[in-house]
Length: 114
Length: 114
Image 1 (cartoon, rainbow over the protein chains, first blue to last red):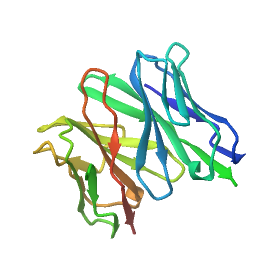
Image 2: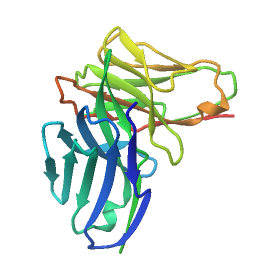
Image 3: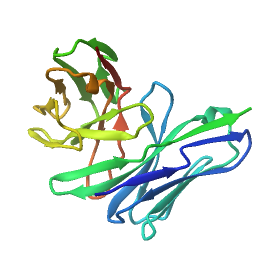
């Protein structure tokens, strides 16, 4: 059974700092890995999707990397801003007998202080 | 540009009552999912569907039922509501083709069972 772990559970940084969020998974036979952002009381917004054949994806100040062999992904946020404060979740898509499904980590709650 | 729409956003139920959470998407996605999110926890998959007429159980299906009569709609039925079903419910959809498939989420439905 695929398990996804995110460390740390919570992170507080001053504005302008570069930071890294970690995601690890136990089964390397994944289709893809997706990073989401969730604001309090809201749904999840997709940030980056990395296919199993890719090593990284970039969008603006965000860069996500994938190392399937070691079961790890990182989300790098450059020059953090207070507006980046949210919970960040990673999820891996795995093959099932009748389809595919995502397994989520429990998230990292990020606070960026002005 | 509706995406994934869930109704209702909030609902309070008494123990033993039944209700249906509605979910519809306008992106012609073949895959649809129902997740629940409990405080401080990641998302747990309740049911998913790979296309009209096809549904399958996720990690936590007990106490729920689903149907998928059309591509657009994927309602979640709660029978005999219990306090353990107090949670935030998220519907999601994706277009799965080979190893692609970015996941899109609705805004969530917050359910309280008293």
